[in-house]
Image (cartoon, rainbow, N blue to C red; front, side, top):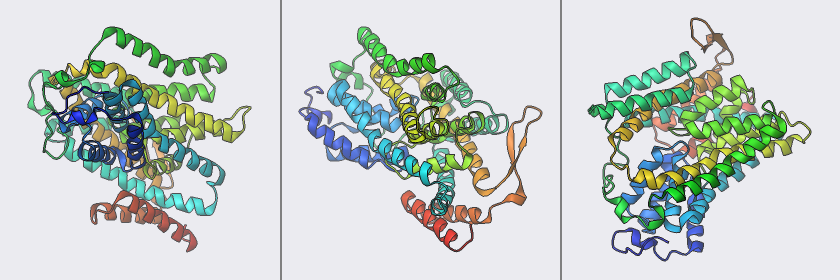
Amino acid sequence: MVSNEKTTGEGAGHGISFGEAFRVWMRVALLSFGGPAGQIAVMHRILVEEKNWISESRFLHALNYCMLLPGPEAQQLATYIGWLLHRTAGGIMAGGLFILPGVIAIMALSYIYAAFGNVGFIEALFFGLKAAVLAIVIQAVVRVGKRALRNRIMIALAAIAFVAIFFFNVPFPIIIVGAGVIGYFGAKSGRPEFAAVPHGNGKNTAAVDSVLDELPDHVRPSVPRALKVSAVWLLLWLVPVVALLIAFGQTNVFSQIALFFSKMAMVTFGGAYAVLAYVAQQAVEHYHWVQPREMLDGLGMAETTPGPLIMVLQFVGFMAAFRDPGTLSPMLAGTLGGLLATWVTFTPCFLWIFLGAPFVETLRGNKGLAGALTAITAAVVGVILNLSVWFALHTVFRQTSPVRSYGLSFDMPMLSSVDVAALILAIAAATAIFRFNMGMLTVLGGSCAAGVALRILGVI
């Protein structure tokens, strides 16, 4: 339980039963649509405003910490608050429940997709879905850009990141590390451009400086506890990876899934849209696990189901193993591949929270860390722009021409191969989002219906 303080706003957490917490976290999980912004808003409304389990300042302090970590910040925020209220068991419950509905939904949709994906009706459904996803990713560029690109240095970082990843195929981890280093030293030198990016709407956004003094004992820094946490969660994460490598070797699809998504778990700064650019690049072009249109279909699934958008990685793992099942049945292999991708993606999230939170709390107000996060956020805008362009190339154009010379490595669209129906649907979805401010689920549903209508009319 949390401490007995009942006057600071956190005191409401004292006496919360585990059963009540379970019911509330399940409610949060089932309502977690709309990407991290919507998910965090749901948590804030339920935990801060309705239940008064945690104060505004502590909620934002936890969010700022989760923004520094690789992985989905909304799931990690749930883990953090659950841990604060009910220790490690509470963190596992909150973080696990947050992804459970998405795991079930994506697995069910993966079965349907693998079994019936080539049926005309299903193809038409996903044809419309891809157009809406393209518009939603563009919206993400605009939304993050408005918040992050506050000066010319941040705009330059975003532009450099886009050019590096789109035209020169620079790996996503290198871009993130480079931006972090620039931001760290820029902030340490006193440049105001690298000041922390504020969260929220400007009201009550400053967490208290002395928040560490209010924390219960179980989250205070402790080296013995840190060693124990590291041992337990590293074993849970890496033992399956090592076992697969020993049993099947590096060329086996399950070994590749375990290694690749473990690496993703360590570099997924900036949210799902940012890392998906790198995942798409590797899963499509290097491993050939999925086709470009299938990446769009998978993101559409993640957009329309509860849980983190990064759940699309489960779909990628499913399709990878489904197409290379070995001695297993394709559906069983796909199931195991999807669950393996999910395990190695989210297990490290619990490690980051349970290990790092007590120590990072002591670094509150560190200018270098704030500057690193600010620069990474700016670079992420360029990476998400790359994702939107990549999606556009494979949604609006039927063919592209590869350019591979003078260090360049990108696909050039062939204007003669433009898909007019897809272009019109994408423009309509973008108009609905930007001009009429329609909700994400409304746009997705309308685009799917439009795709089916076009199939019935014989247009596609």
